[in-house]
Image 1 (cartoon, rainbow, N blue to C red):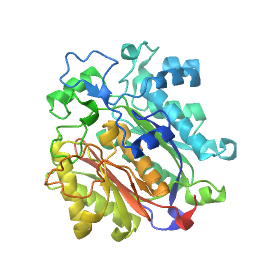
Image 2: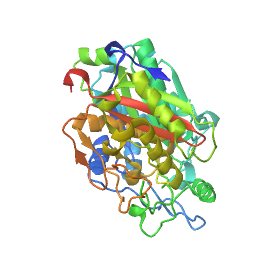
Image 3: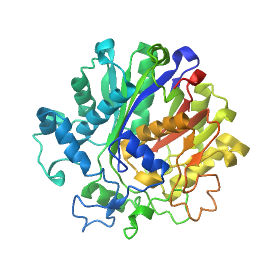
Image 4: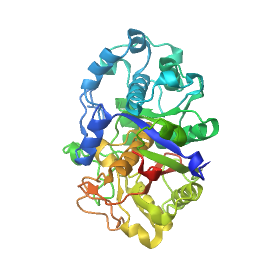
Length: 416
């Protein structure tokens, strides 16, 4: 678990790159999130006849033309789909940060990725058969390809904690930035939208089979929710010491002031129905960050649209915030882009930072008839402008009980 106790140890988010079912740039994704648009559709890239679920969150087709244009032939031919996504979102984040790589010591710059899959989403399903060797299929390949592309010589590795992998990557990157006083890319990626994956989740009764109305299928906290919607995506965040960002007059989306990781040690497929470990994760993150609980003005929920997770998370939020739980805005981006598994925690950290930066909270769409047991403010169907948003938390809870919570604050002195 992490602890950032004073301003000298703050970590700034200065660059964001995002490719999701809602767009191939951070700007497109943010605009569609704010607009309450759904990126869920009928799957077109492979035959779903054998699948009970025939919908998902596909990255827009324009992406595949984009990677052909932007990636060198060697990378395009040898790196797998998730590794290519990692490179392109990292490039977006570095460009967005306006950081000149000529002015840093690349030998210490880190790359930490979070992904639960390896070669998923490549090969014949996407119209080509890669020249793939054994090393390209290893889970650490995503981080290694990014390190090689930008000549970053610091720590480079992947963390796999199921649905919270991206959030774990962010937390570990925060630790490296604080300890080494160097920059680090934190990237969440997964491309698990495949026939075999759909069939597996169908057997687990985990994903929605609402094929007739794809845009309505993901409905966190709604009475009629019936499972999550599988999606693919990636998000990169450039993290740097706060003092370094201030010295170069960088735009700071938000600062990360603390986080916590826990293990539920309960059930490999289901959360503790009372949300005790989820609550402990949030409480520990807040304690580590030294942010007063009354300062939290937004909770970015894990919000998967499954019966048990949404209810357990609601109970956990009530445990942590008590009477205030009913007045804190809570929302889930999964209602719009589906569940990107290992990418979700990084995407949602970035969205939380953007919410702090713009004082704007994205909605939970398809919340038409709230579950009576989920009775909090989930920002239904329309984004919400807030006068003062100083701090927020974002939750990621992975299969098997891999829990994480990250605490973010608006930049001190209002630096933007």
